[in-house]
Length: 73
Image (tube, rainbow, N blue to C red; front, side, top):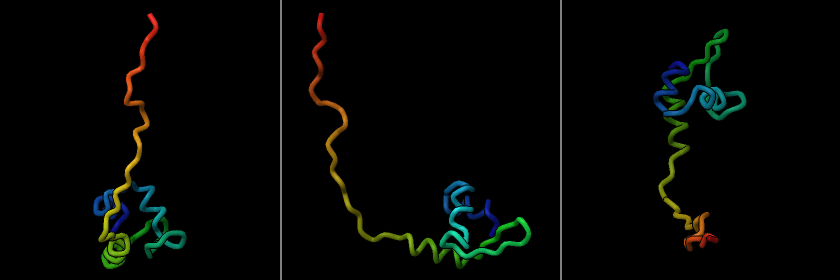
C-alpha cells in the first residue's frame, strides 16, 4: 500500500502515516528510494493493536460558569 492508500484507510494525515512508519514508528514498512510502502497485513495488525473493547467515560466540570454574570449599569 502507498502512503496515500494508508491515509485513506486509517483516516489520518500523511504526516501521521510517516510518523507511524518504522524505524521510529510501530508500523513496519518498505523504503525504496524515497517511496515508502506498507503491507496490508501490517496495517491490519496495527489497527488490531489500537482496538479498545471497553470505553471509559470521564466527567468533567464545565469550563464556563453556569451562573450568568451581572453587569454593572
